Amino acid sequence: RDLHYPLRRQRQMCIRDRSCAACHGTDGKSPGAMPSLYGKSSKYIESSMLSFLHGKRKGTVMNRIAKGYSEKDIKLIANYFGQLSNK
Image (cartoon, rainbow, N blue to C red):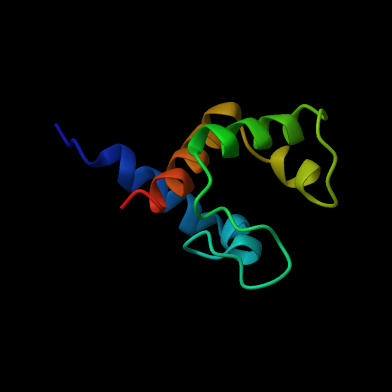
């Protein structure tokens, strides 16, 4: 049994997708005007993404981007970025 699979899966998903990294940086530290994800908890990121997904939070592009993910995908993304600042 591969105990590291969940972490590898999270990393593969975020790196493969690049939609997060393009604006928020590969390490969650935004290189520009977009908010950084680094230092945010996984719960905060997940809650924000779910709010975008379900139209409860308005954004310029995040509502459209969030619709490309399932709730399970959002949890993986949130866990990935949430754990970066805890290393």
